Image (cartoon, rainbow over the protein chains, first blue to last red):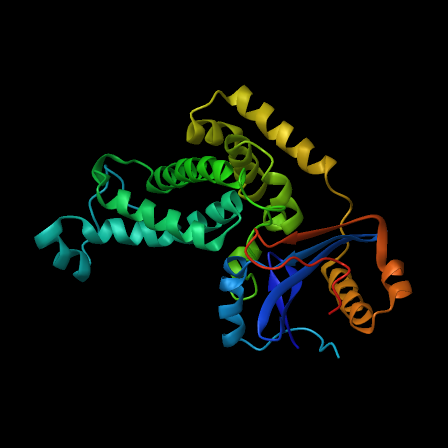
Length: 64
Length: 238
């Protein structure tokens, strides 16, 4: 499984590739903690971001 | 910016084009200067970079067939054209999404490379806001995007949408209330990143106690597969 940190829609997100199948994941949070977890599974919603990952180094901390 | 009352700038390239197509170069340079703004408006209206790109292409085609010599403000004219095309596209998208399987999520739009996308007040591009905007009518959504993200005046928005100014204010207020009702006070982007990293850690280790500690009471999980891919949720072990 690989993780790529990306910045999408002005917030941090990760692109995960598990067994060659990619999906995107991000959260929205308030002072109370995580309010929304959003899983992006549809390939068409990931296409624009997946392409840009090829061009730039993923920003942000590495997650082990 | 050239208007009907000003002579065209006589640059080498405009002279070259003038022989065949009159003011071709003028139409291009005006369009290029406002293109990024048209793309950003369309992104917020449609929640999709690919669909926004189609709108910008469509505006360009229409611009080429427009009698540009009678247009006093090309930037206003192009913004009007783009917004109206977005409203049409959003209206037909709503019909399509009535048959969409599962919850609808916007497309992830990469904002790290395009400084312009992040430079303007980009509340209207945040995923949670895009999801809320999706529930507005396309016209309400346009008033909100133009007012909140691009700082157009009520008078300008009324012109763009062909509405009365008072009616425009009403629509913006309604949209603002709708967005405010659905949202909580946001954390900083550093904290959002930290929570996402902590969530990934806990999920990969299967640490349920740590996961629960990260969640607010009313946590919701949206899984957008549109019926095309397999579904996943918080129970899905990373």
